[in-house]
Image 1 (cartoon, helix red, strand yellow):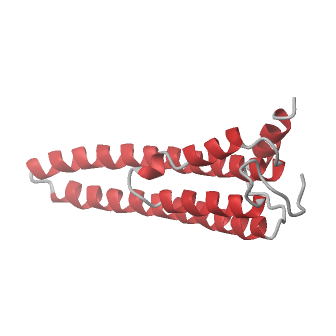
Image 2: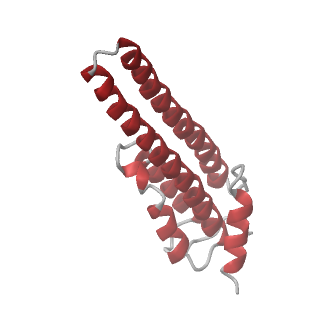
Length: 155
């Protein structure tokens, strides 16, 4: 992978292009509803980039990180919905224990979603910082996948 200053397919410096990609993706990762599709923008960057493996590598890492975020958010939303329905039935039957436990479940599930999003954001900020200086950085758990995808692009 070329970690020397170079241009991307768009004509922008590759590091600027990656920084823009990560900034937009991180912001989308915090917008309710948009966090389900925050991975689409880096996928577009990956598919349209023809010259820079550097841009492709960082883009596919962002795709993988935000797909994980979307999956976790979907699972959490399902849990919160199930607990909310259970909570509605507990309140209807005047079961205070069910109401307290249900509320705690919603808070715990929401906290997990925020923690996962924060962890992903921190890794993406580290990636952004390194990419901007044309340094290679591997986001844990997704870098191997990213390397495979970048190699596949050369076949």
